[in-house]
Amino acid sequence: MTDISEAYIAKLVARAEANYPMFKANQNKINAAEANVGKAKMSYLEALTFSYIYQPNGVNTLNDAGNKNSNYTFNGIQAGVYFNLGTFLEKPYAVKEAKQQVEIANNEQNTYYLTITAEVKRRYYTYVGAIALLKYATQSTVDAQSLFNEMKNKFGKGEATFDEYTKAQTNLTTAYQAKVQAETGLLIAKAGVEEFVGEKLENIR
Image (tube, rainbow, N blue to C red; front, top):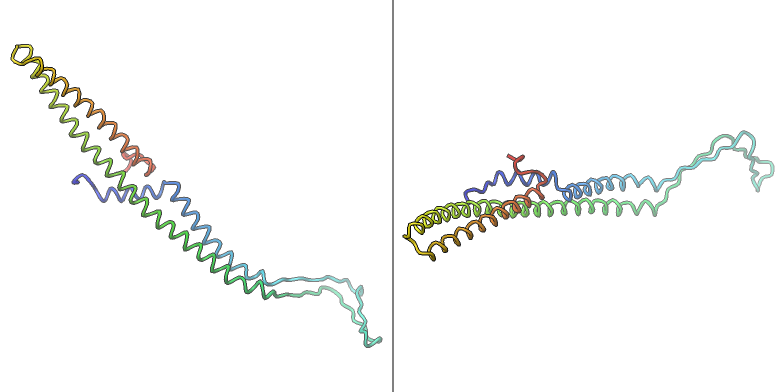
């Protein structure tokens, strides 16, 4: 446990946040949701409709049906603005829904942050444990090699039995196998951390 560095774990988590594709994808969702809030607010203008009619001089003349002597002539541009109350009343709900989408995206990001932190820690602890196991396996191999060499000399001088020599040889083989397994476990654990962090551990100091 003394080999575990919380400061180093914090660096690994920061790198994972910066490099892991899913974390970036969630951030893009937040940005898109925030953009939709602005879009929903601007959609209030959809309730207003602007129109115009252009009439050349003297083309359109309307008669007042009640007064035959009254003529109305419209010349130039006639403009108007129309207001749709139903569309206007829908917009607050659209804005509220867009804000809720932002909140949902932020909650997903916070959840994923916790997931990343936990996963980085789990893989890092496995990596540190693999280092410790390799140290023990290496020392056991050294001890087994030393004992085998001693037993080999004794067997050659007739000071040890064949069973003792064979047992020492078997212990050495077992120690080497354990060392190979520990080395493999360390490489796998290291690759697991680097996969999640997105960088070689040697580049993170």
